[in-house]
Image (cartoon, helix red, strand yellow):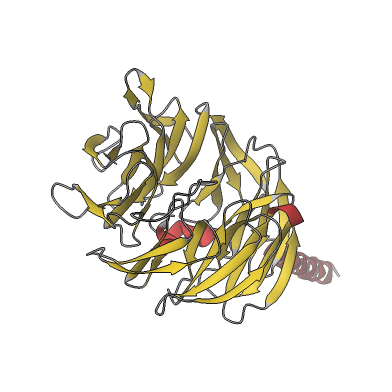
Length: 393
């Protein structure tokens, strides 16, 4: 009798353990299809699954997200949100909570994560320069101030490049700096003059070229970071020459998504066109007249097409441009205030935030058919965790 009871107990225990393992499996998921949507008006982010096309959770209390961006840890579990109020917030995508939040400056514009995932750098408008933090603890590692005539110089165009390095530009000084952390947490700084008022920058996916847009000059500046002594080279000189001068309603954004195969596509400042150049030589290939002033020109991951949105007041339109013919192949009105475009990692879908509809629209990236919509409060940036494995994202 006792043997039967013991046997029954052991069977019950084994069954319970099996059920517990199954229950645990039901609540465990991977992070490769996760991402964050910025809800700019409410200081919150949505955690979503791109595979399931649904919102999983909302995390609140992230401060001023009126100009926010995100980078991800190498394991794709944590998103680091850079807020306009100088906030740096580490969000746990699995537990749907704030892991840690600090206010590191008065006004910041974005950030980057080092190639080893150990350092988080933040570009600051106020007090200027960049600050660098330990990615696990958010403890400060380095403070790299920048000033002109005693006043802080706004840092922007902050990008990670291979070798535990960051590259960024300075609005007031017209310089580009390389901060090299390869030997430890005390950086070696290299400074060079890139041009008048650099407003944003991109780094090519291989980490070789850093390209700064210049608001005050009729050109851009390209830096070959593979050279022993990198130096800015003027490219696309005179691209605004002879054009009617238009008011700039919103500065275009530059990022590594602008590389389409061997070509690079850049939104022109103050004109209704895209500029195309060959990566490496940066010789101009051609131009594409577009609907209005382009803000984002985002290449599909295979580089075959580029999706474009526009500045206020013409920001209800999306256009798609063929990267070989440089022609617009599709145009439609997505809704008022189209703010951002993000492709799924392999480019099968394009996710589009439409702020004034309080929607994120999901399109088939090949047929342009709308597949789904997600509710979001004044959505702006959409960031998929696959960015963790892309240089300059």
